[in-house]
Length: 382
Image (tube, rainbow, N blue to C red; front, side, top):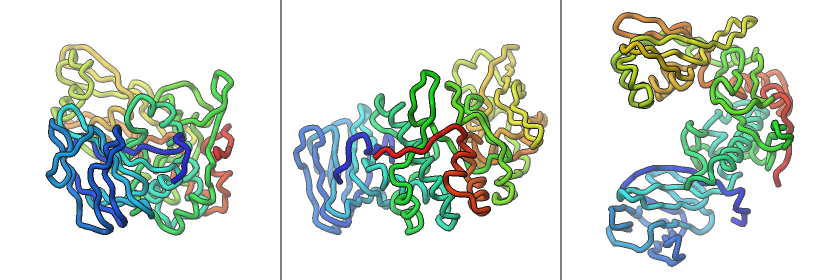
């Protein structure tokens, strides 16, 4: 796999674990990553290999091995399995001071995308929607790698905290075709200093009729492709529980505890006694009101503020109950209710169901991208 370092992706698969099992379709080699010395090897298609750790280091099948970082490599087709899930590339294990370790998949950008596109969109969706997803995901990954990767041991997570990555399980012929057809294509835009580069090409499942300005959700400098646009398409492709979602309720004590635990700076509030949208993004032509800032009032009489998206994912980390911030908060006595819900996800950038809707109407990949990321340009990185 002769790929330039800048186009390898480090995907965090597991964090702070004490044990895992690895397997390979071919021969499997375990190497002390720093000393570059082999510490164990196993024959083709052999039994699972157990790797564990303690404060004293790593153990392979209960045998102590040298190295604070291990590299698990295989021969062609360069596929390994960890805890029953197969990925392409290599596996790096990094020992932590508390005796646990992190498991990181080192994989070239293009094979990585084959595991992302199929995890983010069904492979039976229109080809131009899948190609749009491939370009957006490639752009997002490179931006995050450049922006944050230099200061940590991994670039992206395998979860939707970055973008979903399911490895080989997400691959199919149609997904691979979308990745291959868009090989090396990314989106760039002009920054305030006049430079041109990739940007965080966010996307979410269902925008609910209008995508949101990224500054209202994630902050950062103003970027033309992420200011938000009208979307007339997702309402025709998204199922009702995601375009319009029902009321959900949460116990006030639980909500208060979650907020104060995640945001210690708000502990001077005492108990949280009131939640109210203090800032909203209103799109009158689509009858959409998204709460972008929430005032949090406490029993001490003090107040604090949280972004709407931060509150949503604090109260409901799964994001599957409070599906978006296009909703209203109502005091129901012992509970807070989130009502009049619409959309699924943070709503910034491309609307995935909207992209499918545009593709169904015959829109080309470039047309979909320019609609959701206005002012951007498609460029090749290879």
